[in-house]
Image (cartoon, rainbow, N blue to C red; front, side):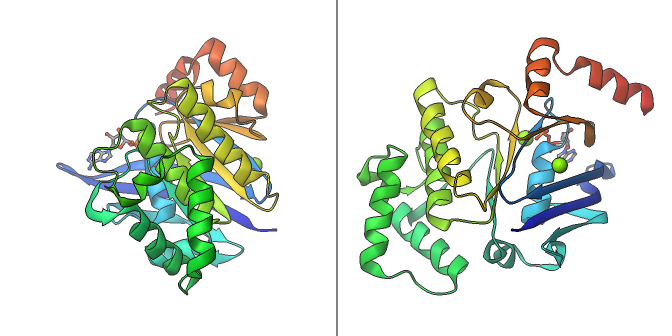
Length: 255
Ligand code: ADP
Ligand code: MG
Ligand code: MG
């Protein structure tokens, strides 16, 4: 049983005209075994939250805390966060020319585990994981994300999730730009991961459509840098019907 705890998190970025506060006091607790969906309009700070937890240098934490089983996550390097069991699937995965998928995965696995995986089982695991996300084995020799379609990039993110097996997965718009088949493959990968029971998922999404495949235990409406409302899966249905406008207007009135 593990707990990822975000308390009153305030985060700024350096904009052209000085620091700009993006996260304005985020409170969220994710326990292993739980799937949380964060839903909100464009520009509300969802990716900022994901990157801040993962340790992207662009974001400055001005106050608040992030802890994993009581350990101060914000004091850890990006590598240490991964080793502690945090995984981020980025909204826009980066291309890494000259580094093959096979080498990238092995390097990442070695970094996370602190030792190189045993070669024989590793090759078997990689092949099984590629089959599970319906990626052609020839992708192992391609440069990471270079020339990948949107769907192939997202499958590659889920491939990493399968192989690195973190405690908590933060999935930032893993559903955007996917056709219906890729959406199913990606969702099944997330469900395989979370069905291991002691794993937690923070699923960031703009649309409710992925929630037909992944059933969240909790839904959080994210607007203007904070959580505006929380509920169960039924809240997603209400958002589908009503949109975010009501929350956006309320946040504007408050500002
Ligand atoms: P979301 O993922 O919910 O769409 P983001 O976290 O990507 O939102 O962005 C939140 C807000 O932060 C947006 O309004 C975006 O324009 C702003 N932002 C991010 N980086 C910068 C920057 N370097 N300068 C100014 N504004 C920024
Ligand atoms: Mg909760
Ligand atoms: Mg985003």
